Length: 87
Image 1 (tube, rainbow, N blue to C red):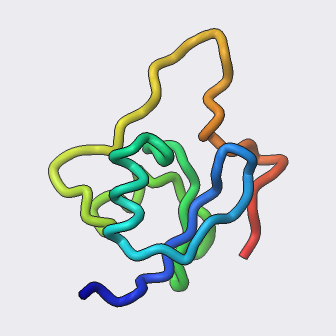
Image 2 (image 1 turned 45 degrees about the horizontal axis):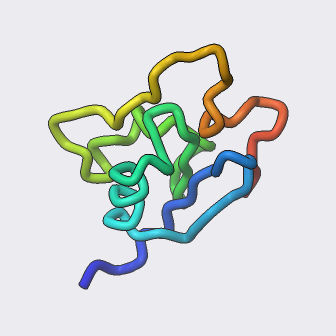
């Protein structure tokens, strides 16, 4: 059983969710709740980072997390800088 890795991410409402194991964060990517632009954090990181920057550490080896297709609507999973969650 994987120990709790204490990963957090900002959801569509810019709310901090977690703690999650790495496996749970990967599952969130697979179901589309998290993408490459989603801000994530764990103890030891200097600050919130887009998931794409830590994809290898999370266990998304060999591919980048999917980015939602562009449309006329803003991406609901991409947190804005004005509402970035804090630890």
